Length: 255
Length: 245
Image (cartoon, rainbow over all chains, first blue to last red; front, side, top):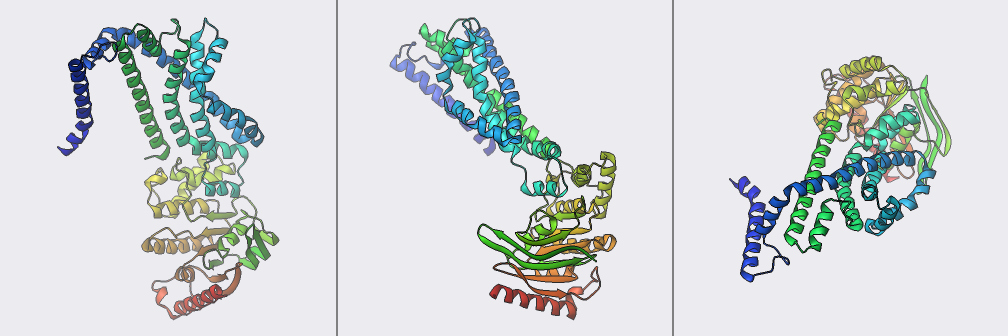
């Protein structure tokens, strides 16, 4: 009974807030273009559903492609960097600069390079850049995270470089890689959405474009609808990867 | 015949002298306990014998072949992603033994430490005592001439550590490899070792060297014999003097 109450509590709060919002909109007669009531937003979601799904898939697919690219590049680079101290020192400054520069600041440049005809390439490129860092730093940390006593044991038994890599450092890095991918997935969506906002053309018809387009026409309820789907998509992707991480850890640790 | 020796060995760290000068010879089949307060260089001496560290001055003589020296650390130090069998087979596989052969040897080693049936278990599924046994099996699997134990039972409860002490002695009776182990515990040292070496602090030096009479493995009630009591008392006194010095 208590467990049920605890589980229902957050939903009850949401319902209460929505009811308050609806009431306030009606009683204060707030114009719909300024703040639509939840009922209008719900209506917009239902009306726009096919378009929203299509737009969501557009954004999501770009984010997933970016995640895959970032995953491969980041892991290969992390591997190369941990094998060569010189390479790490070479790459580090550029990596830091790229990481601290806000993605929105480089988006217009990437848009120019991708060309007006291929704005979706800019999307993938920008989302890749954002998704790159959590995987890269996770992999670098993980490849150095082997238990020092296990390292001593490998010393003692005269293990070679390749044996150390495949039998000690790569397996030790697995939990860090899982965590990195989980964080990167959420960021890939952020990157894709930011890039969409910057490109802002009719050729890129993702969720961000839906928000922009509806905003330009002052169809505020549609803006909220797209925002709602965007949030749900991010939560779903994060939940999926969190679950994948748990499975992965269970497989890795055997429990 | 000696299997390993430290001769006039000194080790300096950045913060100053950590060990030495120390000279210590380990005879074949000998069980030597290194006893001393924390930070007196016991573990450093052990790492020198293992070849995991090199002395600043002096010489270390040891069996240098692959798997001729084995170490058990304070923690089980098992790879969590490998089964007990794969953990034990690891030293053999690193030395290039084919997997099937290494796994067979690993299963035999696990059976010897009383873990037959737990071959497929992961370290996370084992109790502390069982994980320590897997670690012991991994050390034994290469049939080392010298087995080094760095406070191997420190993290275990009293009952488990006593059982493991007897098991180590029973295993020693069949392998007859020389054993050097580090401990804080005087009783454990006198019970397990044929020779107790007491180390003193600042920097670590040897302040006492006691032979322990009596059969190995120990008979029941060995802890109550006068010989055990007298030696334990003598070791304690030397330890106290070493700390005071």
